[in-house]
Length: 96
Image 1 (cartoon, rainbow, N blue to C red):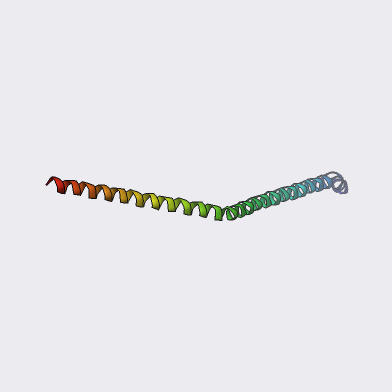
Image 2 (image 1 turned 45 degrees about the vertical axis):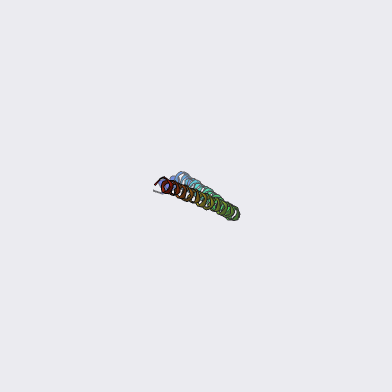
């Protein structure tokens, strides 16, 4: 009985301890990698948010110009249509 316990103490306990140490080292390594990757993702989002915030005034000015040009063009087109209609009505009146 004592011999079998001695054999267990000599062979199996150090083997189990080494396995435990390897498991613990792998766990810590994986945890560290996960934390580093999570930090990278958070930094990417922060940088993206900062970039978008930095570009916001430029984009809003550009949008304002585009909207202004659209409405000017639309007003011109409506005025042209109105002029053409009035001209057509005038000619129709002359013909009658």
